[in-house]
Image (cartoon, rainbow, N blue to C red):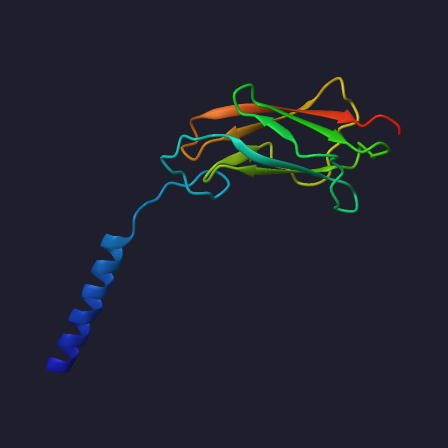
Length: 136
């Protein structure tokens, strides 16, 4: 009888400890953890072609104050089939999500993405300006 009592007591203590330690951490609609972090910026930007190789001629210029990204792509790049890649500050996310290739062919209307901070309150919209390298 004593053995069963100790086993039941141990199970009760483990269950109680597990319940007390489990925190109801908030998550957003994407299942990502919502944190207290308010930082919200792009730290790096890459632009890949259909062959998943870079099409940039140099590093993108990211202005976190003006919230712009300027990059020059190689002459002859197929602007309808590009894959942008953003590196963001910790806990931030990008809206809209990038799910595949993006059409950048309308250079007069640059693409925009919003960086949403970890607290999901602070949001900053970045505009991506593409310039095609002149014909050599």
